[in-house]
Image 1 (cartoon, one colour):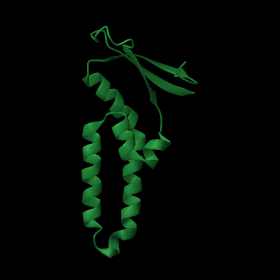
Image 2: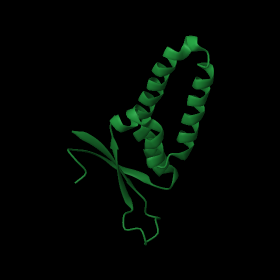
Image 3: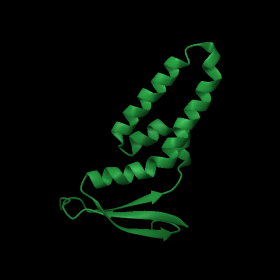
Image 4: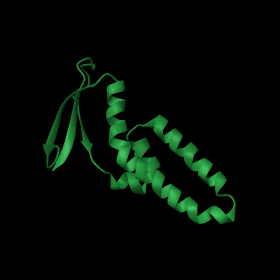
Length: 111
């Protein structure tokens, strides 16, 4: 079973057919494999900028050949962090845009 966080926005314009969002609260394999693109896909712009800054700093630090192997593991850890916390960031983003959490549902899928 997967947990879905249900968010609703009463103040959304009527032109939007969906005022309710379902955010799946789970570990994302796609976010682990492609964290930057996952952040962009879910419109988490600030997190994507921070992620690029962190990876740039890690690359700069690993400019010396002695730290090259550590760079791969640090990149993996950064992707793991996005995969674990990405859904919480999505929920926080919706709350920032006026949505409120109305329920948490355990279900097999969204339907």
